[in-house]
Image 1 (cartoon, rainbow, N blue to C red):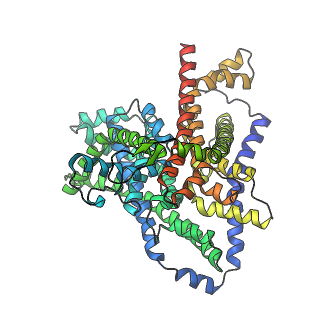
Image 2: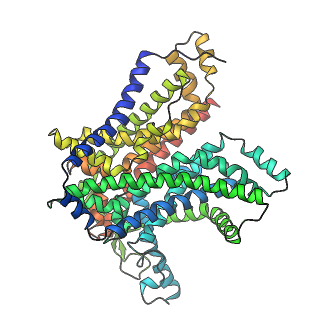
Image 3: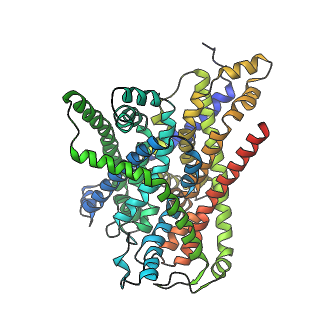
Length: 552
């Protein structure tokens, strides 16, 4: 067994600062301020909260959404991984880099009652007198929100599934199952999937919490009156009427409670899956017919997902691009009356500063998040002792809205004005866990004996790390940075609440424009929100490819 590398003081200090500033401090601030607020609550505040209109329906919306969307995405990802275990990273990268908000806007532009799909059918056949007759999705509904989240979460869970597959002998399991007379599909679901579900527990928890607490996407495509629970809490927080802030605090606590219930249900889902398999093996019975139909539907969805996602993503980009250049586009015309640069020219003086603001926040916060993740992973690797992942990933496992509300209350309590630095810190709190989650598997699998060999040849520990580890893990590091960059570009709540209108990004402005109904402006801002992560991804891919060719 190789001896561990010495833990330098600077490494210990850096890892400690990263954990303190990006995990401990954010959670403690929110917890302390929520405790202080609860001590001042009265029975009338609780009564007013319970009597809020649409309360139960809003809670049901959120529970249904956070139960169904992650499970659908998870099982499609698992089914897809059976057929295409390799060459996924190149396909997943563009899908992961598209922000949820831009994707949602593009999907509505494609499939809403006045979307491109209905226009194309009307132009081809001329049989639809009213747009809703052929619409696949409404402009705003729970159904629209559900499918946007399902389609967008599948790539993330696919990436996590591929990482989990490297930790188990999946091919050996499949061979054993086939030698016992089972098909490859049956061997996959009975032998490999139970192991994958255990390793997907944290990624699934992150998806569940995100689905429960997302605000910007429901504000544009989700149901209205009532909206989902996170929307309702956000509206209370933005309301200046007496008692609204107390309702927002209680709503944030309800979000924490809902998250705990859903994470518990996710754990029970794993146990239920394993119980079903044990029952089937012990009783030597075939599974119920309805389960077979569900399995067949999942396999079909898995085969169709990649071409469908490619077509939808291409359509989303095309729809955003066409709307941003349209001078007038009335239903049922298939194309705009004319193309014009007027929207770009008129909006560029306002858009350019927002792009720079978004870009600067994303560059710095993604770099800080990746650096913090590397410091923590290196510190653990040198000590040969790894921390529990769940508390390092609290930024993903706790609902975002109540966390950010706690930070906003803290700034108000200490009389701190909104500032770019506070927004940067809040972005780094969320870029760090994503970078850590993406990089963790590859970093742990790295053979650290190579670093000892380098040091035995006279190189310092830092020089060995830069010359040996970094070139080998360059692609995962670049990929983790791109994911962190995309997360920062897409962050709405931290920018909106801690920036308080003084720090504005493309994302916050797109949500504001979405309430106005101007599709040309919305298409322009959503397009730029999509272009920033895609550009970062292309640059990272070119840098990685150039380095690979140089070393060949």
